[in-house]
Length: 300
Image 1: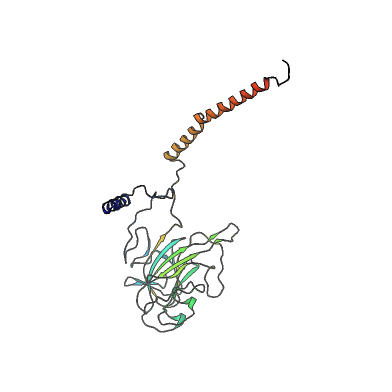
Image 2: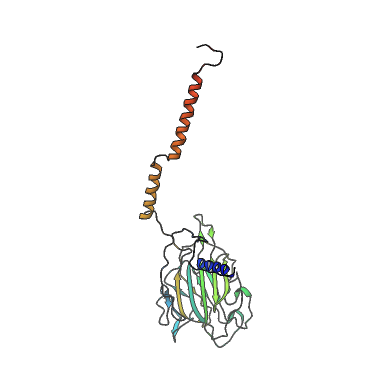
């Protein structure tokens, strides 16, 4: 008995390890396009398919740069206006590093204030929120005046901080109404602080959020709020909402399948069907013979 049990266990182990037909694998059957292969980059190296906006050298990726400067590999906010990209973006992944001034000279909204505006309309707040009280939906990582961050992940003033932003642009109907809102996911220093939140409209200081139909792609804007906030290592990836599927309508495999389907419709009836037809014919003949015979009591 122990030998039989051991043998059964061995057989079961072999069946599981070799993937024997004890369980059939389920597959979706969807013909997905093979994902592109890219080099992922590293802590200071962007992914291979990223559009680099600033690598420590110059402001050539931006327009209207008056007052902004580059020093020691970092952009320093200045002048009287913000910094806007020449290139336009819709759905995208944005990475940047920023640092509030090391010297604290103010409090609240006057301390290391700036912002990243996706499509020039939807702001992720930049602020020195390290031991600095202000309204919660206006602190670092907030979707300005719409959502506070889930947590305050700020480092002390002067230290470099990272934002990783995933943005889904809004969609509009032909009649200018909103088909689907914008969405934002934000990681601050690697910590999730905005989790795919739907935006109520454009962010503003003086009016409630509201949508107005706009193009599918617009520039990214970095706010100048009068504080010498620094920026470095800025890059953007254009992203799709869903993986692509393969169109097999003109593929040899699809044509072969269609040809096989057409041939199957032209085949003669099976033997089983022919037998059924012959049985029906015989029954009809018997009924005809019976109707031709005289009924009892009738003379021919």
